[in-house]
Length: 547
Image (cartoon, rainbow, N blue to C red; front, side, top):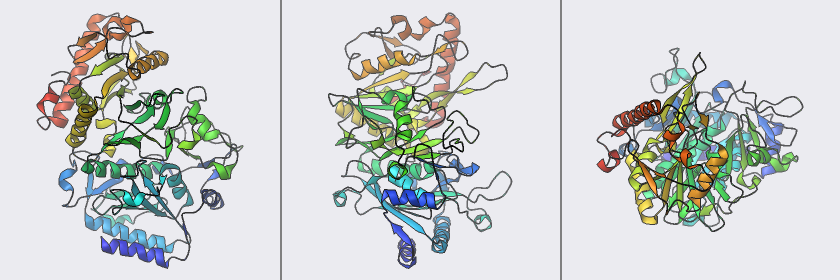
């Protein structure tokens, strides 16, 4: 490790033009002057990346496999791709040479984690002002008492070279082989033990964000802190709630509540102190953005016409010559994104920390129309559904009828949770027991039949159920048990028709419901056996659907 850091120190000392921790306005101006981004009609910045950088590149995202940590990483996961220490060191050496050849470098010293007792300092060095501006949007200023953090002597160093490429011939047999037989020229690499990161060839902002969050998701459980891919908000009475869900389940919409202050919308940690947001900003999907549907995101991206005070960044969004956007045009990518500080939102908790959560909501968009709109989970069920991370994806057909495909992403963020799965699940179980947190499963998907026959749950109905869960209305009501899915379904909720709460009632063809319910339960059982069979506490297997 010493050699790699010595090589970096040489760059920091010998390079003649490194701008260190520039003021935000100067960073914005540099991005414009360098033509890394253009100003929009409303004063934000807009940038466009090469096609290979419109999203994460999971197959180029790798982890250094070293004796110190290999037993704690789940190498059976397709998201934990190993590379050797020697390969990482080669890439680091190449990165140092690239940095020395650049006329201008930019450096930021920020941190992750709103709770300063375990915030992690991150030094980011790169050749693009825009990369550093992204860290200003997403990473936090270092707190005054960072020296008291448990990670004070374990900072992280990240090198970002988004528009440079590795020499494929130098890395044959060491990194990914492409379908055409050639070697990839992109690398997003993490060395957890030496706390070093490299991004070469990826201009997608999410590569920076998710690399660092993966690092935190690895480091925190060692300290007994549970990382969670979730939204968090706080009610007027101080009750904190967490909302976990994959894309398309309504996590952002449901967590943005005018009556509840937002802590954050993506990554949080649960320690003995309570809940804390990882980040300083948001990195929101912008495709199909409408002011009436997502007013907070819309206004955050478009709220200020002074570009030097703005700094919100549009990434791969269709923009016309007049500087205005078409959020419904996905020709560039359906994954257009926007980054902005949390302070651009109207109702946020400052600082973004809260008490231990009173309520946790697992969101799923079940396109089968089988799961209840709300159900209460026991601690064992909560651990199971946390491990399963279920939702549905819709696979298109020529007939126009779409058959839902069951999708499982453990912890509702599997690609970014590198440790062995039982560590995260056991931490959740321990904290639920210690703090008496109530967990509910909320289905924001279909009712009255599967996709193509039934209808999507009305958002106002879902909001009423969410409010009831957060307000404690389900704590003293009668429940009916679903014997196939082992779920406990409330028999009533004020403002919601009773028949809607039990999904079988909403189907015209009851036999078809029963048949599809058994099929979905079998999907759960098959996935559990494949992913976890024999590896976890038997009490978790007992509450798995289909068992």
